[in-house]
Length: 112
Length: 114
Image (tube, rainbow over all chains, first blue to last red; front, side, top):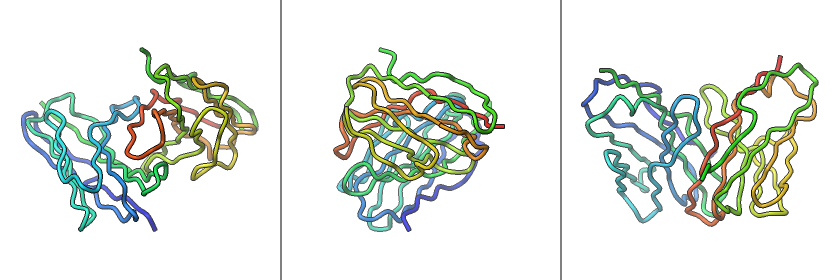
């Protein structure tokens, strides 16, 4: 069964600290992996998109990595800010485009 | 550019009532989607429209219908609402459906069915 699992479910960190969120998937055949940020009460916003041939992609303080062999991805947030408090969602697509599987997300709380 | 807009933002229905959720995008995108988001679960695709004039079922289409009114607008209709349809509904759009593609999401409609 095609699945996307994220860990941890929730995380609390202090402002200025770094953190890493994990995503494991069993989707096959794999096409691409996306990370989204979803603020409370808002729709998801894309952070990074990685295809099979890419193993790292950065967007400011956000860096995503992909290991297609082990079917794992991580999202590293550097020097966290209060505005990073949100849910982070991992999304994996099948080859062929529209079939995407959304993870349940990791809820990040950044405290002052 | 407003991006993807959805109306209403909140709605409370009684079981058996009907309603239509509206979605519009101003990015000239070809593809549009409707998702639902439930606590502890990932977004699930209800219906999608790859291009104007076409619609297809997603993962959880039962109890819903859609209309691609024109290139900009994609509506979702609940004919007879049930408590199991209590959820947050998101509309999204993308330029095309050729992978990899970026989806842009609306702000969501929070629906409660009593």
